[in-house]
Image (tube, rainbow, N blue to C red; front, side, top):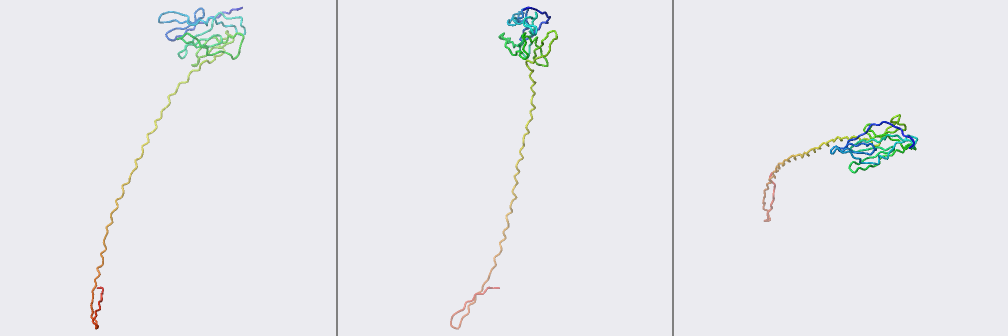
Length: 204
């Protein structure tokens, strides 16, 4: 590098999994284990990062501008042009974002991370002296899940079928019509020739 610019920068620390994470004097990502009170480098690739002056790839700042942020139970940090998710169990880093919108020879765009309105954002600027120019959303805050209102389905009560009792049919009284009694009378009349005439007459 042909030129070095100095800039004061506060130390950024993050607390996660009973450890405090920050960058040591060599810009190595390190962890302070509170149970053992030991401070150990856990990721050394960050020591290779340097921030060039925008529009120039030969002049760099003497300070480092990577920041650790604990967000939603995970640890994140930035390089000059990328954002990484750090696995505290395996001490490995995974790239989750790279700035490519307006390329510059310096490849220096990101000067830290911050949580804005619940979102994880990268701080972007082309001139460090002017401060942060914009916040780039890296991870959007999850929307709260609304508990659905459960509407109970009303129980439909079936109307019982009313069975009409049959109207008892009266047995008709049968009145026997008396048969007329017809009386007859017979009459035998002797004839002169020795025969008889029999006549039957209805009585009145």
